[in-house]
Amino acid sequence: MKVPLPKVIQKVLQECLDNFNEQKTGVRAGRDVEFLHEIRVAGRRLINALWAFSSFLTDQDVEIWQKLIKRFNRYVGEARDIDVQVEFLKDFKKKYKADEEFVDVVISGLQKKRSKLQAKIMSSLNELEDKKVLASVGHEIRGVGQHPLVCTGSEAYRFAELKISARLKELIAFKKYVDRPECVHELHMMRNAVRNLRYTMEAFAGLYPKNYQEFLTALQKLQGFLGKIHDMDVWAQELSKSAHRIKAHDHKAAGHLIGHCKKERIKTYKAFVLFWERCQKDHFWKKLGLAIAG
Image (tube, rainbow, N blue to C red):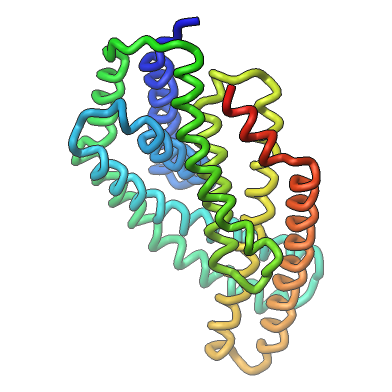
């Protein structure tokens, strides 16, 4: 079987770019936080695809494009994290009917911070357009489709395997931190490694059979556990830092909220470890390695 690999790669890259561009109007309007979430995911997928298919890209500015998109994504990520935190606090207030005045003060502070971030997001998005980054990426993608390479199925699988294996190796390097709940930074980096592996596998999904989706579903679940662990770590830390700035009668409320974050963290961490151990018992990583070998 002959595979026109450049055409396959062009299709994936174009979908990533189109998904990013589709969210821009909504992000500029700033009314629906889901646009922010979608463009962050689209940006990450685009950055990852540019990495995965770098050998088919010829423009010397590819690394500059990645850097500028990453900067935009950093601002978007900070804003999205605040949006999620605000929703968490609203749910906390509604569920526990406690510390409502203090929670409202915290939410107000977060919303002010979020407003300032919106200006940075707009400035960074304008920079992407003013420097014609997205247009240049589009031009480069069209060039990929003109590449004459046609390879066998086994050669296409080998190319995919090399890229996915590199991401898998990055993830497995963090395995030693699974049983170390105190390693906050390393668990966050592990989450990033899971995400990168998942997005790289998604980029090559067209080459693989339907049961490939089972691996993606498991990775998404791992990413979810590690993401929530990170959220609870960040929120508890931020609340602890701000404790000295609040009124004396609010210290109890702050302690209550920090305690809630820590309990959620413990619960999520236990679920993460159980799921990881199940993956180990089921030889998940070995099966994944065999699957990507085609």
